Length: 201
Image (cartoon, rainbow, N blue to C red; front, side, top):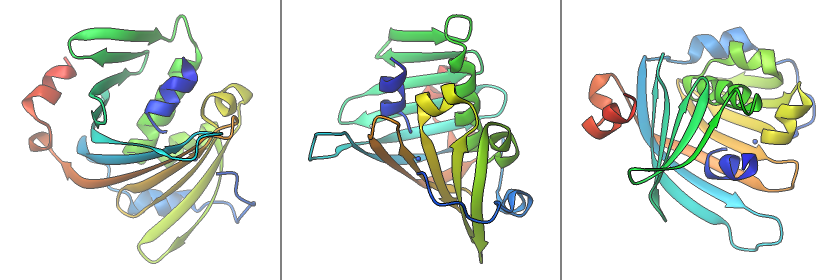
């Protein structure tokens, strides 16, 4: 279940150790609006399968409420993440619900996702060893999980960005490889549709 969640989502790359990531400098470059929405395009390469699995959709990050991850293609699917639970919706039906009481790793995964999409490298630094660099208005960071449970659930991550996170690359322990790119980013209350706003309630 955890692997299928990561497969839908993210959802990262063991790079040789670079100089310690200039976290403060990168953090200063990042915009962190209270509401951020946009498009995601995801390509997942599964071990033993030649053709990658492609998907796309919309996401919204709302401070204090959580993350909404709506896959539109190839099949509609919605994930709603709050601090203590992950809910997968298919239409109006709850297909899966995981909470932190039953699965302690849920809180850890959700913390990572909030931090990733909100550009909170300071929080990520508590869970990962960070290596990276800044060049002009761009930066890149490689993350290696400090906790074995997190490493098993997510794998290793590589991020690139500027004012916002632009790409996330994930290499899972299983050998599966995921690349996600973000585009069409908008901030502020007008960034969300009425339907997306209602999904957070």
